[in-house]
Amino acid sequence: MRVPARIAGGPETKLMVDTGMGVTLLTPEACERAGCVREGTWSGQRMSGQTVTLTIARVSSLVVAGHRVENHRVAVFESDDVIHHDLGVEGIAGLDVFRDQPVTFDHQKMRVVLETAQSLTAREKIGTKVPVRVKHDGPSTEVYLPLEVAPSIVAEMEVDSGSLHMILDDRFMTTLALDPASPDVERKDGRDETGQPYVRRYAKLPRAVHVT
Image: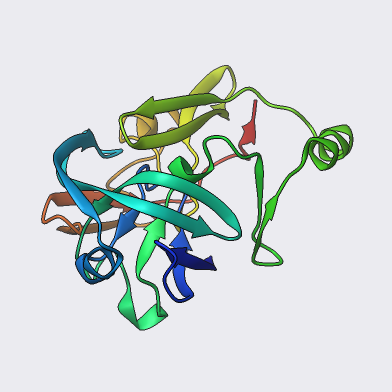
């Protein structure tokens, strides 16, 4: 999902929205143009448990999908594997931008809705509430929700709109009676955007899953 954005009051540009990013990323070029003030580094963990160290900077203002934050901390990061320049974006907005703003991500209509107290109340009346855990770690914000993957087996899942698949730890293969050696399970070996090696197995789950 790409949305209009302004960095430090500059010309309108676009950012990608990724709820699994944690901390908002800007390209070095965008940060330099905006006069970002670098503040050192911050280390956080990816879903895999891998530690990643990022350069952190302050941007005087950031407007994402109409929502404005002041004196916001961002990560300065350059990687074509993460920030896809062919999509015309200058960074990726994480949930940290919306810490104080109720927001709905409508993926079918490809839009971000900034909720008011009244609209949020109306949405709650027609929806179903589920418990979530919100984690703030320095400049990063992540949201987790419980997913029942097998009878009485609940996994805490990070809400990641940037992922094309549901991702489970390998240990759930035994829980779900999935054989890694089965021809129905596809294996891929590679390296992620930070150069970390990985093994991923793609399989169809034997049953439907649902948010608890």
